[in-house]
View 1 (cartoon, one colour):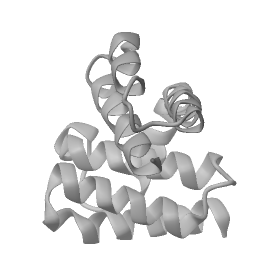
View 2 (tube, one colour):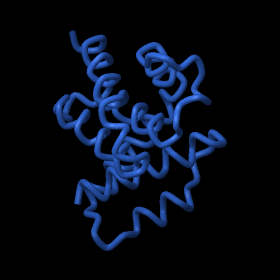
View 3 (tube, one colour):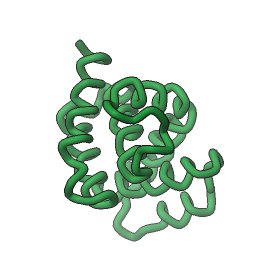
View 4 (spheres, helix red, strand yellow):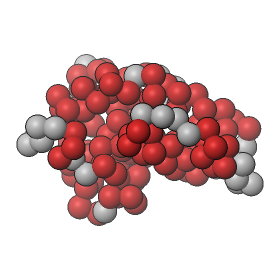
Length: 134
């Protein structure tokens, strides 16, 4: 179930955002869900490692696109992680349709950050999509 896989990626990146260490025990626990297929587990590993590898670059991309925030610390962490995840898919996941990447990031931000985050996430990722993909 790709939805659960996306939530697992989000949770792992959220945890990573605090101490910049990928917790393999958390990854193992999330990947052992009965609802995940082998393809989902592969997606989680590949995506999380891609985000971790490009984390500083993605943070810079997000911060250049957000309006009204001078530092990462001022952004709501739940929204920030959704933006980083969305930015990664827009920039480095050509197999993910751009509309899906934005929509899924909005859904994650809404679920973990609240309903009021949707416009901000949509606008920021739309700007990043234009920058990355013309």
